[in-house]
Image (cartoon, rainbow, N blue to C red; front, side, top):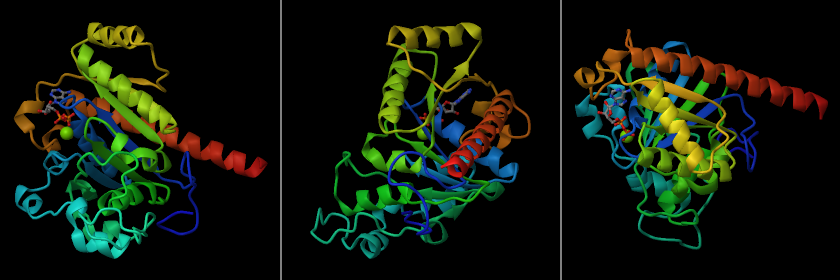
Length: 296
Ligand SMILES: Nc1ncnc2c1ncn2[C@@H]1O[C@H](COP(=O)(O)OP(=O)(O)O)[C@@H](O)[C@H]1O
Ligand SMILES: [Mg+2]
């Protein structure tokens, strides 16, 4: 039963609603926030209703999306919203695992109450992080974050795209219930590829269906070959697709916001292709789910 609409959604595996949920993972510094922000604004410009979630404790996504620094300085992350957490879970942050903790709170008002506006109509929720929460953590903050990401039911044309810290393990199975697509971002180095492989395997173990490899900051075919060779050396992985995002000289001049890249840059053009393909894959998934529903 879905925590948001109360009508549909599944206990495990791919969600059964019509939206798309994308989680962006990989080593620190490889370009996760840049890709998340570019995808969010690109999809919003093509008519999708986009919710961007910043689940990295460093909280860079707002500035990368182009939200003003004065607005961002007033944002209290979800993990620190003591009153909201108590209202939803029955316990305040820091109270630990009380006997009355609600593990599946109704977070359907999360976006209307706690999101802030970002350019192009994107909404942003800043989650913050729970220190070393672990997959089985029963603290109120974690219960709320897990319920928030697993309980969102979406309609067609709605997209959730979530920027993360390096790993996704602290979301545990909540992530599998909530997300259908993982973008594993690497740059052409051994360390980044190794971390990417670890997060890809974790995403697979959590049951995320579509796991894509994104080679960022590529300076040409040699960089891509290098990454693929490292992937093989580390035991291989059955990625749904491999995407290549070029090293883009225009990025430093526009940062922290990606806004200046959107109207014509090699990086934004490549993300535009990725975004169109993700939309096509989401449509295919819906079609397959509907076909299965009809034949069942
Ligand atoms: N394709 C690219 N070309 C040039 N610079 C990039 C590219 N992608 C990201 N960057 C830059 O690399 C740095 C790290 O990117 P960021 O998105 O913050 O990484 P992460 O979120 O994974 O830590 C930022 O300064 C960003 O502007
Ligand atoms: Mg980041």
